[in-house]
Image (cartoon, rainbow over all chains, first blue to last red):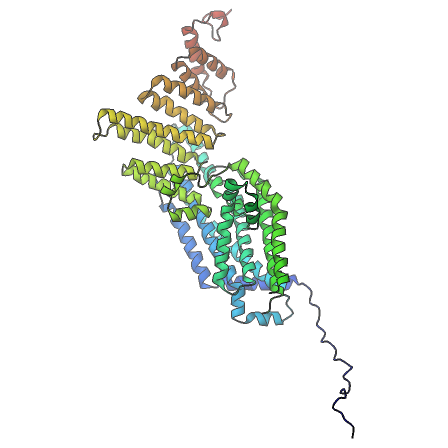
Length: 301
Length: 264
């Protein structure tokens, strides 16, 4: 009888073949499907609808803050109020809406189902971000539409009450009031606000790739928002301190997108400023999404 | 998450910041040129007026709304006749929106006209105190407009309103000659801008005359006469003023713009 204790089992040298994993290329279709699904889910949420209603109510009550019968002051108040409401509430919707995308998927375990399919993580991440961007677009369209309605109503009531030293000068006075209210630079201002929302959504997405807590994502983005908003003032006041400036450089300068005050007080926004701002915002967003992708790709879910 | 990935991510964030730095500088330079530098907290007394929530709102980029609220507060204090609180709030609104003509104009008007008059008729003070308080508030109105000019040196309206304050308030209640002379100076500065109206130029010329400088006034009227005008030139007024000065200054008939006896 032979001793088989130290003998190698038969066929041990022939290793089992590696399971062949089919290569899944990047698919824009899958990304768009995920984006649309994210968009539909987001707008069906009660939190989003309540925030949107609050934003619309705030814009609607802005004309109630009447000063007195100085038409220029009234238009300025309405413009400041509308732009402020769009900025604040749009910001909340953008950040809160994006902050819960990944954590909710992980919490509900739906992310396993999705990633088990031939869906690449980059498609998933990009789809979620684009879905959030669609929510931001829809939010802005609704708020801007409401703002236009309010502005037109206020402008009409002001024109009906307008007066001038002589009747011949009345058309000039009305023209001046219309130029103040229907300022083309407001469109550029809104475009920059939109790019700012996209940037903040990308920052929120970046944080959510390594944090599963929605509150953490919101708070961190809020801190970046305040730091970014103050960066412009910090550079004006302490620009000579190079080391401080180098540390601050990692935070996007959000004051670039804050042109509402200047537009309302009659300053012009040039096209080059607009394109530079958009390029800056899009560039920074790409960086944060790329960084988030690198983290998310190697994350064990 | 592995250390390698963390380092790569950090490197990407830092490298992108450096790559985008030239674009940031370009945008910053453009904003400085177009909008000016908006100082946020240069003085300690700002903090005495601005509350914590307002400070946060300002820092987050909502200066416009905070400024509007402070202006509304200022207006409310005006209705209650609390002048010091009105002044602090309106001054803060102007500082928060340093490019808002409306805030500077209205604030200056309130103090130089409304509050100064209220001080003059305040029966709780002696006549000397009334005059002193009136002068104080007119000066505050003047100072607000001077601050507006410092923040907006490229807008003629600020110079015009300051000239108007001097020519119509200062000269009546404080010093007539100084009012007309300073009025002429600021009207002339406003008129240097091509978008300034014709009436500003005529006001400058008239104030020069009333300031005791008829020769300079005469030259200024001639300049206005020779210009093409900016919409409402009013040649008849200019001609009447030139004729009047040529009489008073005894300009020889041969050198007059409007001779009494035109050559046949």
